[in-house]
Amino acid sequence: MTESSSRNKWVLLLTLTFAHFSSISLAQDGLVANGDFETRPLNGFPSEAVTDGPVEIPSWRSIGTVELVASGESVGGGMVLIVPRGTHAVRLGNDAEISQELTVEKGSSYAVTFSAARTCAQMESLNVSVPPASQTVDLQTLYNVQGWDPYSISFAAAEEKVRLNFKNPGMEDDPECGPIIDDIAIKKLQVPDKPKDNAVDNGGFEFGPWMFQNVSLGVLLPTNLDEETSPVPGWMVESTRAVRYIDSNHYAVPEGKRAVELVSGKEGIISQMVKTKPEKQYSLSFSLGHARDKCKEPLAVMTFAGDQARSFHYTPESNSTFQVAIVNFTARAESTRIAFYSVYYNTRTDDMSSLCGPVVDDVRVWFSGCSRNQVVRVWLGIGFIFWAYFLVLG
Ligand SMILES: [Ca+2]
Image 1 (tube, rainbow, N blue to C red):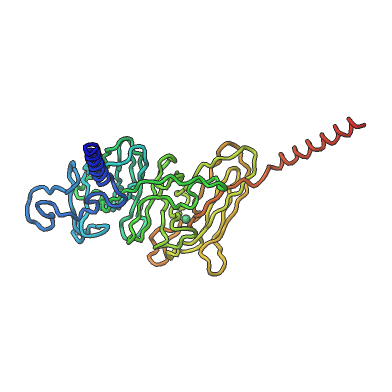
Image 2 (cartoon, rainbow, N blue to C red):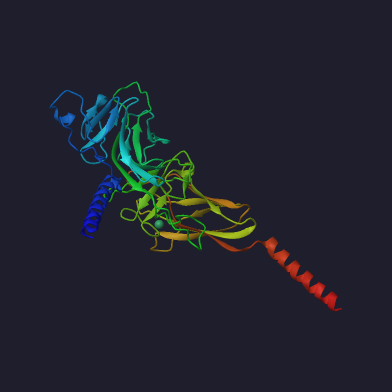
């Protein structure tokens, strides 16, 4: 009896120890280890000029010319390097890469948020991969005057141990060029509940990537054609340029805490395929808003739903920051594409160059009735039964 109870205690202790270690090794939502590059390397930061030798970046594995850069540092041509946040960031030279192993939940989807800046006027891009997923993010467009932006991509974890890799695929003539990255965070994506009265998944955009509380730039969602693993579950960005994921801490959001701002005109399209029944009538409604980010009006959204395409201009009632727009459409197939883009290319009134645009939130699609043809068919049916009844009786 005592032997059994002491064995049970050991089993319990081992289980607790194992649970403890497995919970601390699993990637937590937020910054990855040294994701802000502020951890001091063993031989000091290069800017402190303690040693000439190569600097090992704690928690990361690097290949090629990977440099820790400090804010205020300048490169050739007197250009001052932009460090997104804090004091340090990493610059990736030609073909250089930096990676870190993460322990994740196999089968789950994750969003990676990172900040990136380009250093030269040339076209620069960044390849972010968690094999087999790989995505190249174009850094050519500057979305705001700060010179850097947070971005998010996503991946489905095929294994428990995955390698998060950032690579500069470019081959610039100037070796001092190459993207700067900073603030790398991860978030396990929740699968949104399937609402009963709405065919749209994550229609309020509440499920999405990690956002830093004290970053006011939102998170850019670059092209993502895979609705299975999207940093904003359910939604695809099916265009060459990005849309901005925004939070209610820094922007006016119509519903809940998150929404999207269409910042790239016709080149920033967000869409979703919703389940429908052919030849049935549906209604699509959404909130069209202003982010209160000094975006210069007019603001307008082009909306697609099945066989309908309609534009809506932002004209809210007095004090509101949004209005509700509705499109009625007839479904033609088992699934119907709904999509939104900004009619105009808008910029902020204060700097005239930061990109902005209309806000879309609270997207709903619901069954609103039979189609006209079906109504006619139903009446014909009733008429036929009536006549049959009349003839039989007669
Ligand atoms: Ca929302």
